[in-house]
Length: 217
Length: 217
DNA sequence: GTATGTGAATGTGTTCACAGCC
DNA sequence: GGCTGTGAACACATTCACATAC
Image (cartoon, rainbow over all chains, first blue to last red; front, side, top):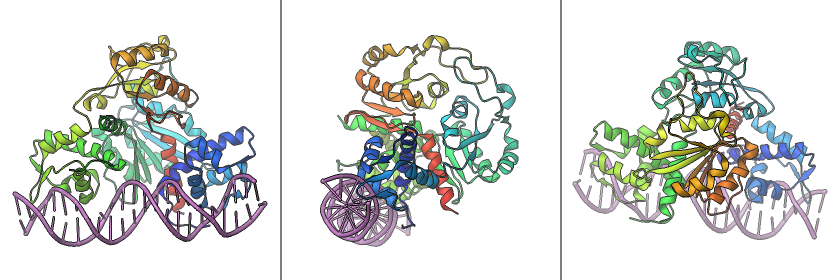
């Protein structure tokens, strides 16, 4: 069992393993090999073993891994067992898409509030056809940010506002005390070193695809 | 000027450079240094220079880069000049969020159609408060996929459906002839080698954050 | 025999530091 | 002097291959 310096790709894969292991566990699977995990998430089995080996020896040589045990261990590493309050800033289509996404709660992420600069105009309108916002999910104006973050002990904020207001929202989030930010806006945010930002940028992804398509000719 | 083996992170950064350079160009900036670019996108200047050097010598030693020239060159690499027809499968909150997102067209990505398994139930309802879908954006049933992909020469599909139908949609997309897929569903897709898939997974990103928060204690 | 765990080897990406050119 | 372009050094990540344990 070593510590110190976990490669960041390893952590990303851990999340994939966790998802698959939970499914396998629900299906009542007992023993699983690194090979089966690898096939399921599209990663070489040696990589799976190495990833897990950073955190301990979870398997049984000559046998495999006990699904239930491994699942628990990995979930503990990712803190899936505990519930993380998160907030979403921006109640446009994207913000609502995220707020109504049930996959978050399944993995321990609890959207405790939505924020918007014009909360009154859109409070729980009926959206025909698609899921509506949870009844009990409050939509607050931005000046409630500090209060909510502190009261609910929020550590993570999700930015789902247009590019031109993203930096200002990021500043507000940092100011309010969150430690980590997911940013959906297509801008590079400027934040202090102790804040972790992860960008989710559709345009960049599309451009990588178009670059690669262009290369093939 | 070398070719062969461009690091994939380089391509991702190229997209960030392009965004910034276009802004700088619009602002009428003439000359820019690798350092200024680096500061703007949060990357060391040596990295900026190395990234660009994979594709040619775009700068002037002792001076910097001509913004207009560099902008054109980078945009050409990313194929931003040409228009890419893309389709979105899934017209839930997420699909609509993507379809109404104007940033795509700015960068040459033209959403030519939305697909949904129940297109009639949601055809252009009025969404109060937020942007409605473009009037001329058709919402088709899934069995129109092949026809649209072939007629519009679509190379990229965006999967915005729930996890349990994502693989089946991916199969349909591959079958229809798209070359690249952006997948928002939290599953690992199984596709042939010649298809490029890029996953955009909020849950994984959140779990990396919660892992890192957990590590700090 | 079989599957894990892991150093060693390899491969990939970043940073350094300086030669080359303005 | 200043800034680019780039080989060489370094750091990081993956893969190999085998010792180890069941």
